[in-house]
Length: 187
Image (cartoon, rainbow, N blue to C red):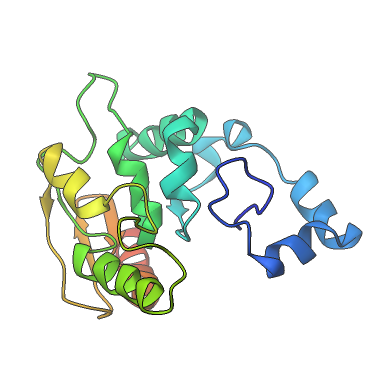
């Protein structure tokens, strides 16, 4: 869920999330959610990190999530990420200090999709042409850390598995990502 109250302003116009936050019964669900650090790796077979726009603004500081994602991966359990949730791989480092995604074949929100989104908001005058929706790009960041980034084209459902690391390209890739997670869990 995005947080319209975030100081970055990344989702200040998200009225749905704002309504969720200001509905006591729904807000309680968030308040009662355990922190990611409370997750016991031994109790689960997989960890799946979803997307949305928030990861592009918040995952740099989500140290507990980065460490938990790596803990699942290093335990030989499924570590999966989908859409902008793949942003976790820009920050996730193995216990030896290497980036988890280095040398891995991965996907995530593609540059062609970021271009499409930017062009859409520019055409409606929602952002000046010198501004972008996202502060950085997953495809570029993953290539910079030595990952083998692949994608299926604009808005096509696509996911890839490299060992116990599973990544889905974008929001239309949920079914493909889920199939790979189930396949990995069945082995």
